[in-house]
Image (spheres, rainbow, N blue to C red):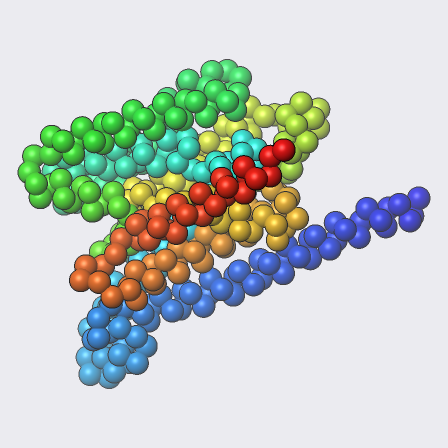
Length: 345
């Protein structure tokens, strides 16, 4: 009996050790990218650490403003948004048992975008609080509609179909708002915001979004054990004592808080919740419960790296981070579909 127990315990201990090592390495990567994001900027005046140090000696007040009022907010938002999207993607892929699932699947991103677009449309975007408020309201309304359409059982397929319908409806409403924008400048502002960016964000945006994202993290992180059980089948998970209705509700509302807050302050940033779980899943032994924290760190690292990338890439106008993640994510998505097609008998 002791030999059998040792044979079971040893792989589990090794898996836990690999997960802990991965978390440590990703944490170190996040810290390095966070520091780089603070010292790397656009242009030749404050483009790098040497330029920032030189400016600090010449004009300390200007250097302090650049560091604390310009770069720190966008760095904090990149970390928070990346962690939220990575965690949401890992939870949804485990919940739906679908490797193609991501936060946008349930309509959270598009509904938040619609809420923010409505603020632009009615000319209230001049106040920093209205834009995030509109995005969060859009997400909460869509989440309520999703749970209503899911019915009492909250079956997975019903939720997915309801999410697709909400996505179609909110995308159409956003296009309608663009079509009837009061002026070409308003339409251009809406389009630029939808593309997703961390530029021109302040610490007010961080203060607004961070508590909502943390609430989402608190709801999503405890689902790890339930996701492990769901891999054995929904009936098996129920017999093990997990309420799938409660787990689905927890995952959907948590995703709404994470994604809604992220989109409300940065615009739509796609594919992060799809890419990160796929990259890290083999490193944790394909265990969805062990994947959650690494995906938070991996999403934060990817988002920080992407935000650094848009500053380093030399363009007349700063490339939107949502465009860069889409350019990276779309080929990855096609590659994933190709691999899945070849793996079928």
